[in-house]
Length: 239
Image (cartoon, rainbow, N blue to C red):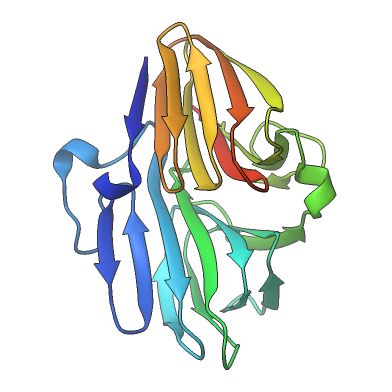
């Protein structure tokens, strides 16, 4: 079963310093019927203005995955980690028993756009940790590249959940195949461009900001249909 959630159906939070689109209940958006999709608790599309940020704040018992789409995001935490995350970088935080961190845009002129994904960990009270890795453009082109995983995918950052996050840059008319297992869920989010997804349920056209939530077994096909350039997407396999 495929449910398409359009960009317009997301909740918009527009503050002077940050623009966010929430796919699930988050912050001031509370919808009990849209609280999560399996272990996926949050999927936020954020655009942070120059010299702005989130001051130090705490988290616990969350797996937080951040993907920088454009610009630079500066991270700092109370474990002693500091990093300027460039576009193409994925960051993982296992909040565990507790971590404080801050995020800001160090640029004086450019916004930073980033996705932030929250997963429920497979167990509470884990030791907090942080990691980050840059994934070159060519590694993500016309493939589903695992970038964060709890199932031991080679080259991916580690998360404490039986889930895998893939990134892809898909050329027009190129096709990817993904075999979803019967007891799994798949969440696809289109960052830019256009794609057509299809399985036994039919064919669905995705525009930028659209998402597809897929349950039950599905022999999934994803085809790039952009009139110009590549389509960029995130696919999350989760329980």
